[in-house]
Length: 101
Image (cartoon, rainbow, N blue to C red; front, side, top):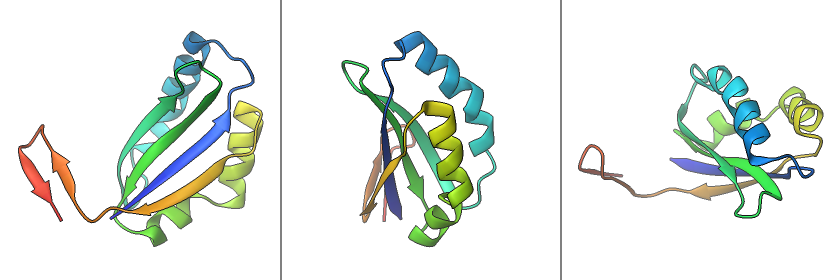
């Protein structure tokens, strides 16, 4: 599994506005091939937003993060996204009570 962390400045948008924007985009991610879970993120002081995505593979992540996707993020949030990838060798899932490899 791979975790991708996406980050961008919010341009000073209020937390309520960021929540509205996030909710409006959430359905787009429900059927993304290889995406297991997505968490929308907002920094403590609201200066940065983004997402933490759990993918089946880096290949699946890279299929989402196309030039069109990057342009959409830049146009919608007003800033170019930064993306970091992390290998995810183990997941502790306290909801299901499982530890996943």
